[in-house]
Image 1 (tube, rainbow, N blue to C red):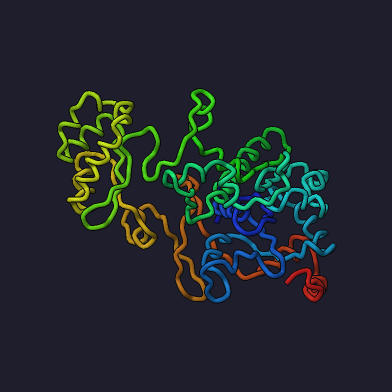
Image 2: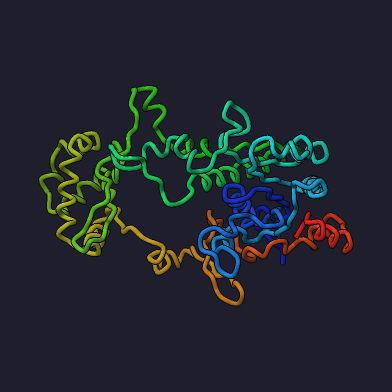
Length: 397
């Protein structure tokens, strides 16, 4: 069967470990690219992170889907030689080592470009490939602070709050995949590849909306705002009578009027001072108190049903169990089922959705080195004796 996915026929060599590089590879593989994941003989450390079952983390089955696992010890000269041969046969390379590491191994973009001028070389690091901080170690947790996100996240007057995911890594991976897509398009015009330089802190910086011009033009520093958002009223999280929470976004002018009418506050719905957002910002405390009082005397389901009936954006706060039970998530195909050791396992679909050439999961993450023979033998031409010797030497597993 012909693979009509947009990246079918392109070969990606993923040299990264942990999250940012590998998730970029996951996106590209989902949409058809052949992704060869190069791991050390001991495996990507993320195989042992969080919930581990039968020797692999459950997360890994999702993160390494559609990837061919090849083990190479890049500290060994022969391992670097084989990695070089592999990169010269690739369309795209993804790496997230510290800046300069690939060059020290003779695997940098200029090393590969001399033999493969069409190579698209995506580099993910904490602070980018140049600048005074380029060599600093940069995990997502640190770069989320440096990139400005942590400062605005949390309650006023309290320490900034971290979301319980590695947001900086995931955003960097999405930026890397987007940059690769742009570079593929440009290569069709020039025939040449280019470097895609992605920094974790810059990926965070890229989602800060109006924070920079508001400071430069008005001297305003955006502060943390708890469950609200600065300058847009009302949009908040409210506690209901049953102890559950609902999120209400009533900040459009006509939406606000319908919201306050349904909440039994016709006085506020028809107050000319509150008809537009600037006036509502001035009176945010009173508006939020009115909505909090209303929610506190009604169950969350009643609040949601009543507001949806009058076309006011409202919704619950879901945990993963709620998501997996929700009919809309199911109808939208947000979960895929793979088989692990004869048992079904649900993993998330990868977005975006394409109507003509959608992505898909062909297989879940596999055991360490499961494609050594295919890649080292068929692609690089090593015979059985050579591959056996590499295993004995610890260059592969």
